[in-house]
Length: 222
Image 1 (cartoon, rainbow, N blue to C red):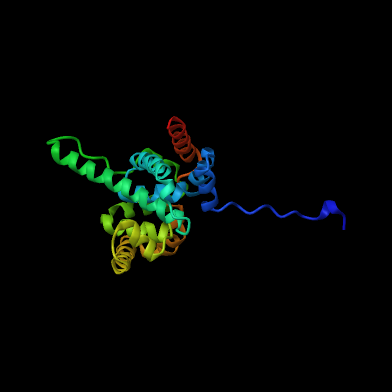
Image 2 (spheres, rainbow, N blue to C red):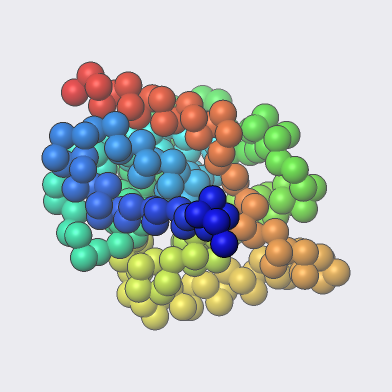
């Protein structure tokens, strides 16, 4: 066998911890790797709380900047995805509280737009659009647990840590959320529902690139 025919295995992807070490050592551009790697679950976490695509996108960018500033506090033996998701949920929850306070202060003002945005037109599947509408109709506590567990696929302990609740509360809310969602969807769509959950609230392409550009530009200004 000639040397040319021997396949050379690709080098393994650097771990999150390795990338963080490079960033903390001064290679700030490496932070882009973390953003690209985790942008979609971070967006989905914010979107689950805020029920608005544009506000969730703004929250994602702020959450990444918050994470960059706090990067030195990240424990290398922990899960970066869980740590980052917790930061994103905190940012989205703060925005939700601010929105509600503002709505309470403004009498006869226009209602907060919690409906679907034009970005939904880019969703490839009609079922995904239906599913997003039904997820939005879930109570806030149930929706957040369902998205963190079934869409982002955090485990029970990680979900509890992100939301500041007990493990048992996660299990109870998840059961209620799944049951409620199943009742809202037609029985004949249940199989398609299970297959389509990973495609809900996709955050890639131009939207992901836009957030990444904004985060990197803000980091350069620091």
